[in-house]
Amino acid sequence: MVPFEYNLVLAMIVFSLGLIGVLFRRNLLFVLMSIELMLNAVNLVFVSASTYLGDSSGQIMVVFIIMTAVCEAAVGLSMVVTLFKQYRTIKSDFYRVLRG
Image 1 (cartoon, rainbow, N blue to C red):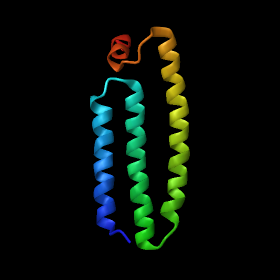
Image 2 (image 1 turned 135 degrees about the vertical axis):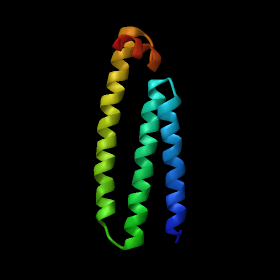
Image 3 (image 1 turned 45 degrees about the vertical axis):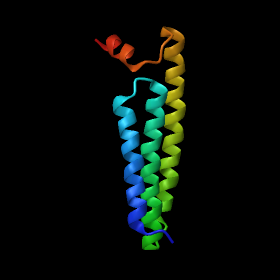
């Protein structure tokens, strides 16, 4: 059995990589993938805490997070495809110009 602290360290590393991807990537597809990384890091914490405590409530929460991630991916990808069809780019800098 893997110690609980190792799982937390791994989750922190994965979450940090996802956060760096959200903050510094310019491609919207990579931003969506980084958000998925952050959600999976949270899932890892829930599952490892659930296993460590012997309670199944963390695993039930993971199911809800996975459902949220699926909805986020479907809506996010449809938005990216629509924006690409209209403007022929998926760079996030271009869409910041459109806001102003």
